[in-house]
Image (cartoon, rainbow, N blue to C red; front, side, top):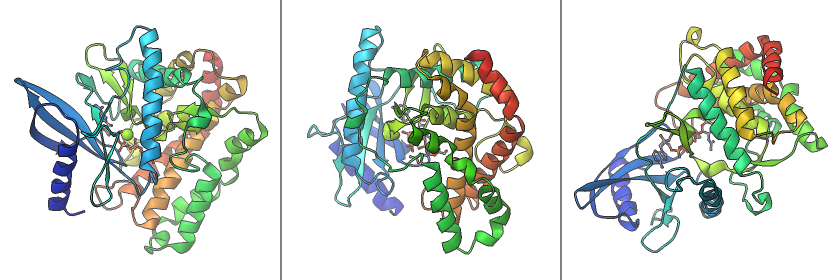
Length: 370
Ligand code: ADP
Ligand code: GN1
Ligand code: MG
C-alpha cells in the first residue's frame, strides 16, 4: 500500500469507527511485528481521548471475522472473571470499540480489515528489561491469564493460524524454504541452516507428548512476549494482557517458553551484536516463579517438567521462523532494515545454545519452585 493511499485508508477507517468527539491526529504506534497499529486521538469537551486502531494482517490471519469473534468472546469471558474479583473491566482486558454500524471490525473497499480498541492509558509497554522483579510480575500475569481461561470452552475458539506452534510443521516449512531458496540467500546462512537441521529430532518432543496425551491441550495466549503485557505506571505491575489474536488451544509450556525466549536475555530480540545476547538465568528464575504462581497450581507434573523444553522449543522455533522469513524474502514479519530477520534469527539461536549449556541449571530452578 502506498503511503498516500495508506493515509487515506486510515482516515476512512477512522471515520467508520464509533470514536467519540472530534478527530485530532493519528500516528504509527508500537513495535508489533504483525499488524499495523496506530494511535488515534480524538477530542471531546477539552479532553483528549486516545484509541488504538489496527489494520489486521489478513495475509497472516486469513479469517479476520472469526478472529474478531474469538477476541470478543474471550474478552467478554474475562470481563466476567474480572468483575467477580472486583477488578476494573476497562483496564484489565482489551475493550473492542465497535464501528458506527455496531460491528467489531470494518472492511474497507480494498479488502483491508480494521479494528479498534480503547487505549490503555497510564501504562508502560516494556520491550526489554533487566529487572527480575518486573519479569516476575509479567510471568504472574501471563500464568494467571492462562488460569483465568482454564474453564473457557476451547472447542468454541477458531484456530486463527493453523499449526501456529506445531514445531515439526514449522521445521518442514523451513526445509522447503531452504530448498526453494527463492531469494538466493541460502548460501549466506549455511551455518544457521545447519544449526536447525541438527535439531530436527528436538522439534518433535512436545508435539509427541501432546499426541500421547502426556501434555494437555489448553486455551493459551500463544504470543506471550513481554510487549504483549501492559504495565500500570502507578504500580509498575501488569494490568492487561494484550495481542489476543492467537488465543486458541495450545500448550502451557509454549506460553512459558515464548516469554523466556524474548525476555530472559541480556539483549534485544534483534540485537546484531551477539556478544550482548546471553541467556539470563536470574530472569529465567524470576519468570519461573511468577508463572508457576500465576498458574495457581493448575499445571500437571509433566507440564512443569517440560518448562525448560518449552523454553528451548519456542526459542528454536522462533529463530527458525525468522530464518524461514529471511529465506522467503521477508514477507511475514515487519522488517525495518536489511538482514533484520537474520539478526533476529541469530539472537534466538545464540539463546538456544546458551540454554543447551544451562539445561541442568534450568531444571534445578524449576524444581525449586514446583
Ligand atoms: P502486533 O500483533 O502487531 O504485535 P499488538 O496488538 O501487540 O500488535 O500491538 C502492538 C503494540 O501496540 C503493543 O505492543 C502495544 O505497545 C501497543 N498497544 C496495543 N494495544 C494497545 C492498547 N489497547 N492500549 C495501549 N497500547 C496498545
Ligand atoms: C510476532 O505480533 P507480535 O509482534 O507480538 C509473532 C510471534 C513471534 C513474534 C516474534 C501472530 O509477535 O509469533 O513470536 O512476532 N506473532 C504472530 O517477535 O506470528
Ligand atoms: Mg504484539
